[in-house]
Image 1: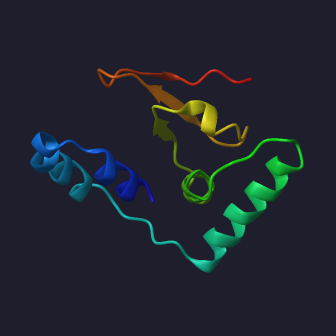
Image 2 (image 1 turned 120 degrees about the horizontal axis):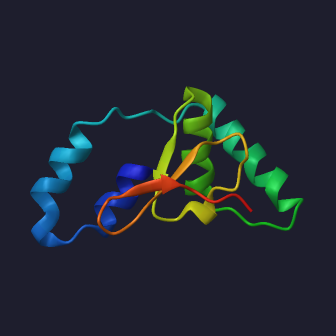
Length: 100
């Protein structure tokens, strides 16, 4: 899901650098277990009045299952307290995402 989001958002002049970067990263396959976890994340937050996208839920479930931190430019899309989230700015600087 992350790869799809990155590729669809890249500019033509970024193609080579983008693929060099994402090809250097591990790809996590979406398993039945991850899909179930993502669905549960969506259901849980919907019960609190918060709508999460399928893609964000799959990304969050993948990070949670692997014990990985998540780096994003949209930290507000990942409110899960069990998820470690870093906010990236346009220059690539990271800071811990504020918790609401």
